[in-house]
Image (cartoon, rainbow, N blue to C red; front, side, top):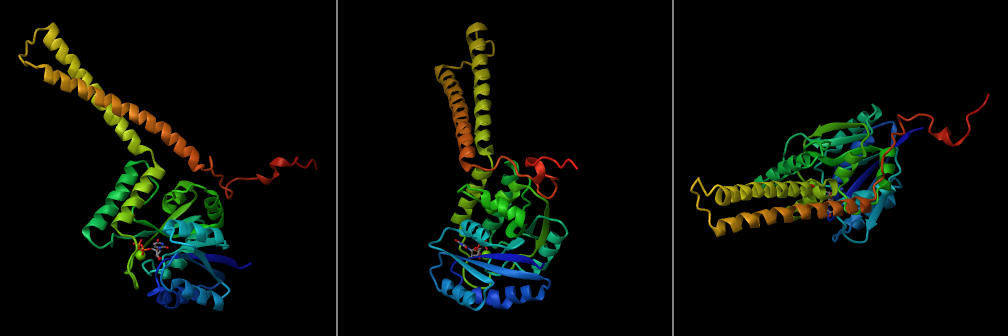
Length: 327
Ligand code: UDP
Ligand code: MG
């Protein structure tokens, strides 16, 4: 049977460029790829312009184009999640609608999938973000992500991605609300392959991710994927507590037992400062402990599956509930 590939496309206020992207790039490219059926899942993420009408006109002409329209803007992450729910293909590809991710590469993703990869991730081959702040911000983001224990996300990896049906089904089971698709997909595991591509220019319109939105996205990534920020403050607290305890002990021994042989003349104000620093350390440690409890509650509410079984590599799982044949 011919395999089906779904292509999920989040679209938000793209009336200027969407036709150009679909007719000029995506559809011709998809038509070139033989031996597969394709389905396009266009997710309208609460566009305020004519985007929805344009998408609907495509769907009317072509049964293989679905339009999932969200009632308001929920952000790209949610739009992707919605698209993945409605995609029915054996593999699902996600791609931006602004032409920055080249549809010409889709065939390479499919090839990598056919070669056994279950998740194929598009990685930008160099930082083509414009402006110093986005560039530095993006570098810093991946550096921090790494420090915080997420070793699986390759710097520059994007939501230009192909996932096998098994991965999509597993992804659809995840119920957490504060989601960063990239981080979650990486968390799932599975056999991965990276494909490098050059991030192009926007075909039309303005990017909707401004600095504030990106900053919030970065904070969400850190918080939803790791507890390292909490732990760091705990360690700072421990360091301050131990440091001021040692300094305080030194002060007492030097002044009141040995009679200040070093002639430091530390007065009451200095002793008070050391004592207060010690208390600050204790407060930080106790805060970190509280925060760890909260992080456990956080993990519980995220309600992630405890583990994910690789259906590809497991054997004879179906027969566990039936008695083995005697013959
Ligand atoms: N997008 C979306 N909802 C939003 C913002 C963006 O569905 O709230 C879509 C947008 O139409 C585009 C893709 O997500 O297809 C990437 O958006 P954008 O180009 O603004 O971001 P960047 O290229 O900077 O990641
Ligand atoms: Mg873009």
